[in-house]
Image 1 (cartoon, helix red, strand yellow):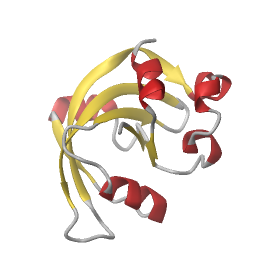
Image 2 (cartoon, rainbow, N blue to C red):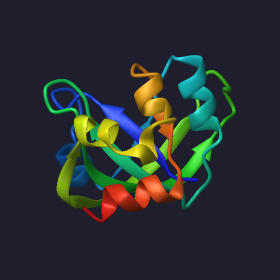
Image 3 (cartoon, rainbow, N blue to C red):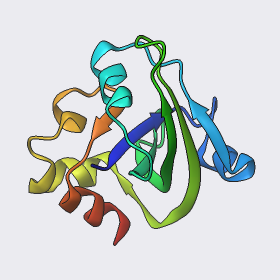
Image 4 (cartoon, rainbow, N blue to C red):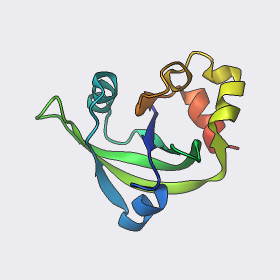
Length: 126
């Protein structure tokens, strides 16, 4: 299952991830978001989304490993993928019927959001 990971670009951007090549995605506190992190599997596809003024899907990444020894603070190692050909704004996603039932739209503060395969495909093929 693909996921969307939200980040504030002034704190940690997709460019930062590309520079580091891999990072550990941690520090998530929302119980639903933590559950989503715990549910990730190695090799799963990710979309990196910038919050704040940008509010856009920016690039791709992949789950390298998931460590759940501490169930309240799973450590998900991710590796950078490629920037999207064109960033996809939250407004564009909200306007698309594929996202009508998405937690991205229904639970705006959720920092780790599951995506369907059609949603992932739409974001990566724009």
